[in-house]
Image (cartoon, rainbow, N blue to C red):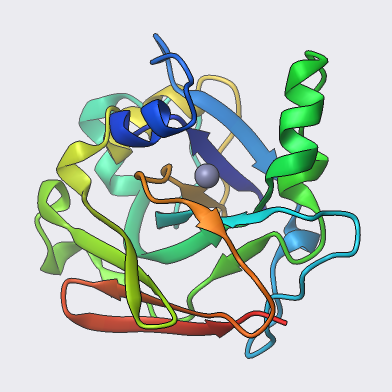
Length: 203
Ligand code: ZN
């Protein structure tokens, strides 16, 4: 399966990293080997001194498709949850500064957390999904899906021009402002509305 990620999809996060607002979605992939096995903690890798959390809405593809029009995009997913796109910010910044691909900064083993509690799209207004992240019981990220520059259907249309979507692929839809560093013994907890979706330890 593919882990398809969208960068720069919330204006407030683009501003905090001093990036430019893109004219089309920023797309990158992570390998499936980056997924943290169920019930395991996130383990800070020795090669980075600045691992950031990025909390994102994640949609699961449940139908094969290519060149999907926006009108039919909603037929390709039925479940969503929260995930964390862990990023070795020091490695990413270093590679960005050299105009090199920064894939390893987001694709390393453990760089992808996906909650195992999934929500039915049919139970929600997709423009009004509120989600938040707490680090050690302090809220650090909070957003509503309406703030996304490109909505999930537009992302599916865009991405499927280049990549065939397959059953089981997941799409990380970008992170809002508030990203920050994780340290040993931190506990990250994600919420959709007031529902606790996950709790993840950092070691
Ligand atoms: Zn991200």
